Image 1 (cartoon, rainbow, N blue to C red):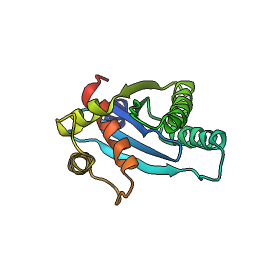
Image 2 (image 1 turned 135 degrees about the horizontal axis):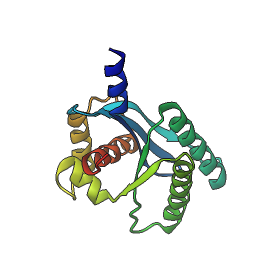
Image 3 (image 1 turned 45 degrees about the vertical axis):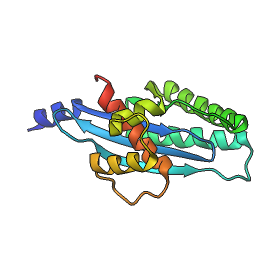
Image 4 (image 1 turned 135 degrees about the vertical axis):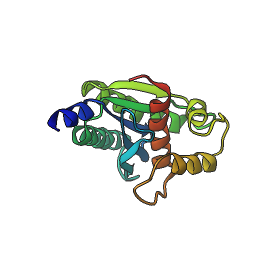
Length: 171
């Protein structure tokens, strides 16, 4: 019996998925056992920082939060959305800095880092790279049991990034 439990533990894969930002960061940890059809959501959250803080303070808090989640759930891989901005350079720079801090924390914790474009994520989750946010939300709800009502799309996006990693990578 102990042997079976040990083998089952070896065949578990945990991935932390991130939808980066500096005001709101979507974070999700999913687990899949080898042979299981579906992933299990162990944790999901939309981590928020105050507008009253400087960008440096916000990035520091984001890094600490990601570090805390990694320590608690012990994933082996971090999946993160690549940035795509058309207009606002100021926002793009802030998100880039937050994203850099997140990747640093992951690398410093010994995690493999996987990066996906919004097109790749939408394709993996919905089958269509130009799917709407609503379509992604609907499909995420069909692909995994969400442990709670999720109000922020950042949190759903983090689950979608994690599902993309499970769908596209060989572990």
